[in-house]
Amino acid sequence: MKKIEMRTPLVEMDGDEMTRILWQGIKEKLLLPFVDLKCEYYDLGLPHRDATDDQVTVDAANAIKKYGVGVKCATITPNAQRVTEYNLKKMWKSPNGTIRAILDGTVFRAPVVVKGIHPSVSTWKKPIVIARHAYGDIYKNTEMYVPGSGKAELVVTGEDGKETRQLIHDFTGAGVVMGMHNTDASISSFARSCFNYALSIKQDLWFSTKDTISKTYDHRFKDIFQEIFDKEYKDAFEKAGITYFYTLIDDAVARVIRSEGGFIWACKNYDGDVMSDMIATAFGSLAMMTSVLVSPDGNYEYEAAHGTVTRHYYRHQKGESTSTNSVATIFAWSGALRKRAELDQLPELAAFADRLEAATIGTIEDGIMTKDLYLLSTLENKQSVDSMGFLDAIAQRLQ
Ligand code: NAP
Ligand code: MG
Image 1 (cartoon, protein in one colour):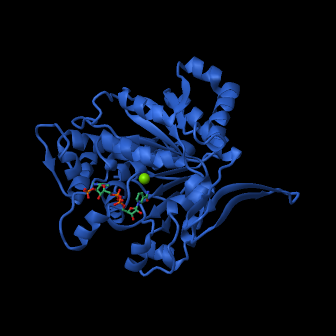
Image 2 (cartoon, rainbow, N blue to C red):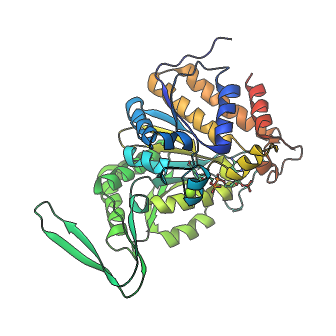
Image 3 (cartoon, rainbow, N blue to C red):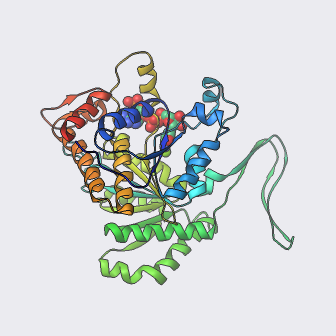
């Protein structure tokens, strides 16, 4: 069989633990037999990040800027325990945080919906897409432990040297303090990517923040969205028959639970992080949540929304069998290949991406699935297979 050709390389970012093992399996069983894969490989596995003083993460992000499309495996964000486990030089920052800080943009997360898996929220009929702002706030914060009494202040020094000060807190004992920021430029591009995405998939857009409490910071997000909507998107939304509406995050949460689904929910960085885990779990499994970072200058980074599945990896290391779900990681590859196909005008490659997704969904709907789905599926003839058994079943279908 002749393999499908590619023109421009994909930026491939390898990762850690169980997902690194799935990554290898997906390439061997589902991609390499069919596609003449052209990738520029970056090893973002923790040992190599440590060896390169995390330079490899920065290089990978810059490569995405150069080529336009990347696909990333889940990676460990080190904490104190990981520093010991991997004997690290430093507690390196979150690779996703580093990549997002370089690319800017918005992360869109959508669940893969299959027959037999019903959302825990019984009113949900259609997927809910989370649009997560991918720049700033708590992910680019500066924080400090305050050991004892003292005054914490916010100081902004203008270009003319003029200082504006505000008291944060007059500490009378130990505590903690944090500073964070966002920029009008990044919030504006967040707004535009959300409006564009809503128009492209013809779904309503909801946006929520905590502007009643954060009267300057969160309020700025609300105002920028409204201004851009009124000036640039109102007519297009009307024509497309979709709506934009803003509401307080508390109200949004209540409405989301009562809704039928089928809309985009735009969230600030932290809200989107947490809410996408909630949405994913309620739709079935975290392992079914896909994720794509869209930067304002049109670069795309595809990945699974879940982590490296450490608990499964430790079992794998002990030689035990695992049943880890690879759907979101497969969809990261299919998403990236389809985008590459679109940019390079390669219809055969785009058709392959469609077939790969159809074979994955078809395998599950035929009753072959990993344990996480097996426990949820209402199909009558279902069987639970191990991590590689699931990939083999998809490969057979693809053949
Ligand atoms: P996780 O890897 O997402 O796994 C949490 C639990 O969710 C698993 O133990 C498993 O539950 C279930 N799960 C997640 N993905 C699954 C899959 N594909 N198939 C089957 N079950 C799945 O989150 P974590 O354990 O909190 O984090 C592990 C590591 O991942 C951390 O080092 C963290 O820094 C990193 N992380 C990376 C990213 C990223 O790169 N984007 C995102 C989040 C976390 P059961 O054990 O009950 O089966
Ligand atoms: Mg999260």
